[in-house]
Length: 365
Image (cartoon, rainbow, N blue to C red; front, side):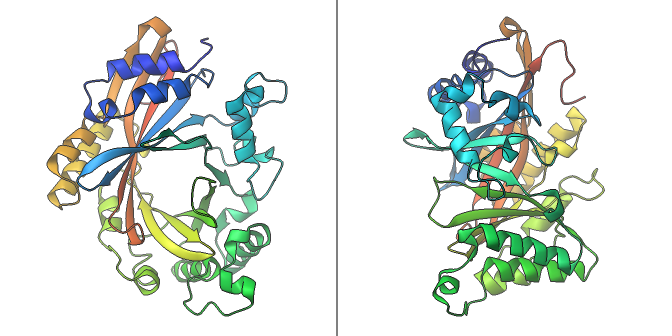
């Protein structure tokens, strides 16, 4: 096994250099950064681009680890845990509101990959990572009003960002945008329609504004936010959820996740994540649906034709890495659309580079 992720990523970038979005990444900085991570048997990297001012610019990157792999990587006696990179990750994990020691979040709590995420800007890769924490199992599903109250009470107890400035001053939150009220109202409306919700993850990052947190809530219907979002945040793009739902007709119920951003306890923005193309296991179908969705965004005027083609070109690209006894595939994973608040009109794209040993089956068929 290789000692560093850097050379493998460098080889993958070289093989993908003809793809516009890969070419536009700060490749040298990312290779140097990845070199501080050891290789892994099945290692996921993600790359994030943001559509802004008529162009797609790199906005983030990160490393994904299989359940329990991060725990092994950060074990007390591991060499990586003693490196500056390992120490920074351990510091970020100690932001876990349900375990300030960070021990809980080293192992996946919900069977999902554990992601270590870094912002990108003109200065390069951010020093400190952001982490999205899984909630304890008893708080992840909202199936009754009591479930919603238990979640809200637990967050209020552990998170200073949960309370608004007015709450802390003993004043009324007159604009009705406190996180408690937003989540309670959304849960009440969905449960009235027998639609349970899943609280996927809670994000914290020292790179964001003070008092920032993000709650990811899944299980939404295309019309779940049609009343709440415009009433609390003004302009709301109600067309996005329907576009997401229509993009993957093969899936019985396409996933739509709300990313709820909070500043100083108040709702600041709502983004919708999807379509999640990873639900399509057939490679040809996945590539076709990605291309079709990009074309639909261009047709609607949300992207220009060049951006749509550039995204479709990384929809699914297989890469051979014979010098490293590895194979890789670059795939578009999902989009994120700002539909209300300060993110209105923003579009983000997330692609994954999955690397695995040649003698093992890959992630797609």
